[in-house]
Length: 279
Image (cartoon, rainbow, N blue to C red; front, side, top):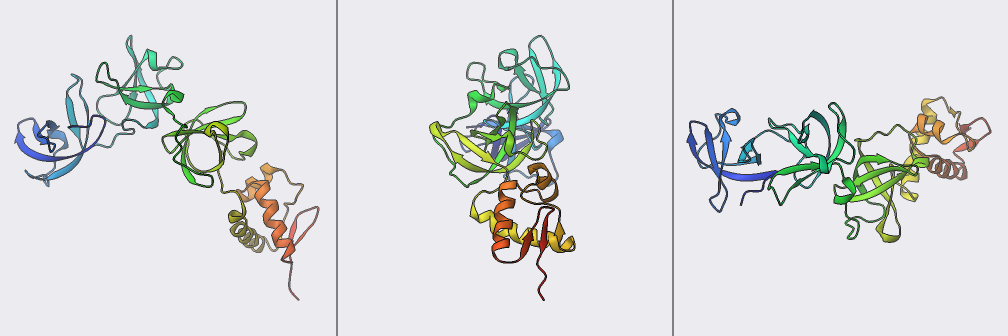
């Protein structure tokens, strides 16, 4: 069985004037057109290809790499809008279709949107949708608190930034915990900070808890040495200033310098922190 909208490992069966025909273990065939053939390809070889539908809705294979695969999310550009819907660049010859019914807001050429790609059961066509929440599932979580996760930012609210977690779940990065520029469509590494009621995920762009303090303390010591023993950062510094200079949150900064102070490695003053120089 061919998997439309996904990668398939297929066997080269025969060469024709239009390309090579490939088959799966059940004998179902698909064409790999001439423009994708290489001298290394031989009859009997097993190759990895992406299978999608051509302009006549026939399965066709390609060795090109799409920007999105079926049942996943990606940030894509709108290339055309017609009476039938919008089309997006997904890295293949035939653009990806987004019907009007799957557009949360009307699309315009040149815009970028986070979309989900799925196989429409009624038409058997690959279709993209900007109605992201419909395709996210938090009922059965595959992550735990503290896990590092892949994030794709898809919307912003008064609370913060909504993110797709590991191409499967929905999570939130609170605005007051963000100290750098974040945009819709950004792909980031993050961490599951907390799992709340109804499996709602609170996310962080950095590790939380004790495990981050120790390496951060060493990092601060290294930065102090580079700065001749003084950094004009203290408990009263703004979260923005701390993040701008050290790329860490104020909470983590305070924990780290507290530990360094207790060990007698630094002095904390109103104007900043100083490295203790041994006699």
